[in-house]
Length: 205
Image (tube, rainbow, N blue to C red; front, top):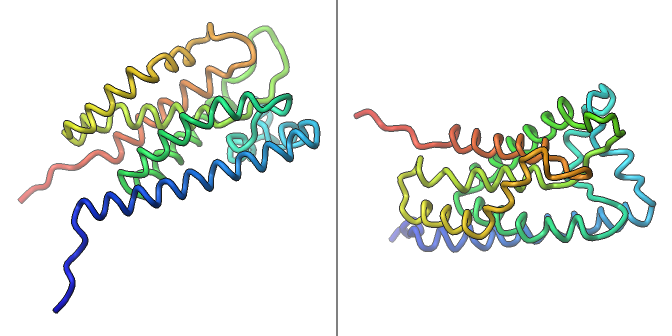
């Protein structure tokens, strides 16, 4: 007798395990990179951070979210929990949705920083950190429930907004020097775009 396909509960449990493993692995990688960056006095920041409008820094769009401030662990520590939580919740929707949300947020944030980053006062800047991806995942989770017409996803979005809605202030230029609001706002836009691209299409009989 052939075995049936796993039910929704089993599929969700499988995704939860995979999501936990994925985010735990990603966190370990980020901390290993930060250890090297601090030990080398910021070599990775200087090598792989985004330098706005520098053509030679275009490849750094792909690497900058992996690197964090080399002067202390505070930058990475602050990003760890929201990245883990948002990444895990996005993974519950499936690997394709997770990779799309992360990928579009990653690229949108990096391109936005490369085009519009830096201070209007002319301060030299190198942008690193996963906050753009975090904002992207946040935006993705906030609006996907409305596209899916899923009450529990809408409820989750409301809980996320209540718990983390304050981070949206990070998209404002007034957040201060040393914080890339460009990474935040373009990452958020990337997450929303991912949710739009992945929205369910009405089936025609």
